[in-house]
Image (tube, rainbow, N blue to C red; front, top):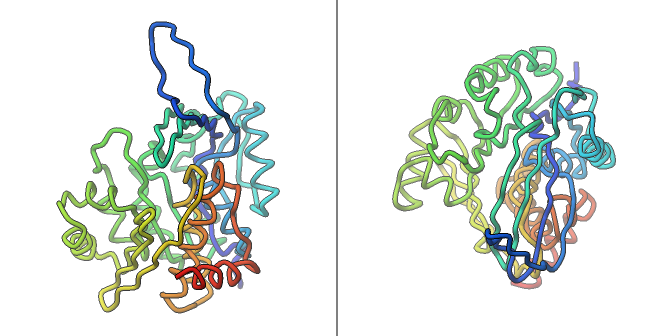
Length: 315
């Protein structure tokens, strides 16, 4: 039987309040500052990933919880508008929907996070029936899914036993400990997608060459390394592929890495060559980096070739 979904993921359900301006650094002592603008949008790495994957033509299901509040309703609306199946998202009246406050200036940002629904998924929610409904399992926000974290290696083992491929984007660790069950989970992921800083901190290495070798020693078959304005590099045991990013004008880069993940999997699950998968991933990341918030600028599958053609003309 053909699985119902191409990809499933665990929702780190939250909204982003994005504040922009020349000076967005708060100053205590009851000092009031005027900022340039703000945007309220659906956030959450896995949620942004799910929307991009659906826009790229994949059948996507997401498991999560939201509060019975306006923020929760915004999340459900955005997911459905993007084509994500939300039947596995529970509305919990006892829960407060998560919130991220992103203070953005130039090419940098600081984030304040209220977890709430972000970490509300329980291990018992991840049934074999849910896993068996898909071809692939993607997990992002590893360190924010605090209730799932102890069981992630077991969930990955169960998924692989059911025939799923797996991918992992660790994202940032707010505690900056970079441990927990991540090491055990790495060896169970077909693709690991950190950024440069995460790769160095997770591996404990001082340079990227040593970091990639460390990941490969953990049994990771593919490392898709996100390198910001420099682009991205895909490492396997046999090959190295590079993507050089075109100039990115404006934007806040929120969600760029999550759309990168979705772009890579949209190619990989279609059995496209790895270099092509990396091109698609890079273009998705660049398109989102130029917008505000994680959803603005996300390309659809029919527009991917247009993005890549325009990028090649700029090289």
